[in-house]
Image 1 (cartoon, rainbow, N blue to C red):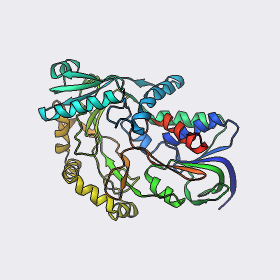
Image 2: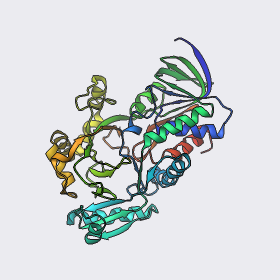
Image 3: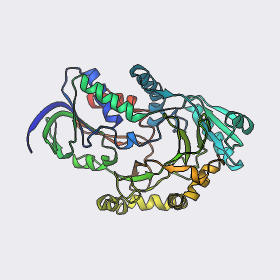
Image 4: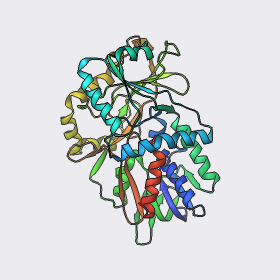
Length: 401
C-alpha cells in the first residue's frame, strides 16, 4: 500500500445510490470528512448508466414493500432534484397493454395493486388505448400518467459534482480489495492505499455479495447477473408512440418483459431480454469471466431458479439468440416495427439477488453491522428511488431508523 488515510464516512460504489447516499450524509454532517470510492474512471458506468431510463410510478410492487414505499417517494424526489439542477425529464406516462383476452384478469390484478399503492392508474378499453396510441395493438390497457423518463447517468454526474463541490472526496479508479471491521470502525484496503473510516456504506451493485462477505456480513444469497439486450428503433417516425409501452407482465416470469421506451434524445428502444450473463460487468454477448460464470453455475439457488422458470428461461435464451423471435414480442403490441428497424444498442446487466432455495429476492435488501451497512439488493426501481433509499441508509447507519 502506498499510503494510509482516515475519513469519518467511507462509501463504496459510485452508482446513483452511492452518490445519493453521499449527498444525504453531507446534508446531515456538513463538517464531516466523507470519502466515496469508485473503481471505474467515472461514476455510473454500470447499472445506473445502462438501464431503461424510466422514472417508475410504482405500479408493480407489492403493497407494503420497500419497493412500493421508496418508489412512491422517489418519483417526486427525482423530479424535484432534476428541476432544481436543470436536468431534463419527461412525464410521458406509460401504457401497460393487454393484447389477448387471457391477459385481462392479470391487468385487473395489476390495477388493484397500483390502487393499493396509491398510484394514479386509469383503465382503458382497447378503443381508448388505440385513440391514445394509433400504432399500438391492445384490447385493453392501464394508463400510468405519472411515469416518466430521465437520463440517470446525467443525474449521477450532477450528484458527483455537487458532492465534490461541497467538500466530499471522490476517489475514482480506486478498487476496494479487502478490509475488516473492528470495534473502532472499518478498515478498507484499496488499490491506492488503506482507508480507516468511522462508518462505511457499501453500494457495490453487481459485486454486492462478494463485498458483503469480504467484510464479514452474513450473506445467504448470491448475485446472479442477467444480461438485458436492448435495440434502438430506426426507420420509424418521431411520433411512433407518445407513451412508454409495456406488456402485461406474466406472473410466471420473474421479469417485466420487452417494452418500448421513449428516450430523452427523442428516439426509442425496445428491451430488455433477460439471460444469464457470462460476466458480471461484461456487456457483450461474448463477454466471459470464468470466476463470475463459475459463481453462478456452482450456486444451488441458480439451478433451482432455473427449474422453477424453465419455460421462460428457454424462451428468453431463444429470443436472445434470434432477433426474429425477439421481434415477435415487440410486434404483439406494435406490428409496424420490422426486423430492419432493430439497431444495436448498449446492453445492461441486472444484479439479481437469488436465495439458496432459488427464490428471487424481490425487494431491497440491507445488511447492517456495527459500523457499516451493505446494500445487498437494489433492483429496479432503485434508480427512481435513489434519494429515499439514501435517506433510509443514512437513518440506519446513524441509528435513526
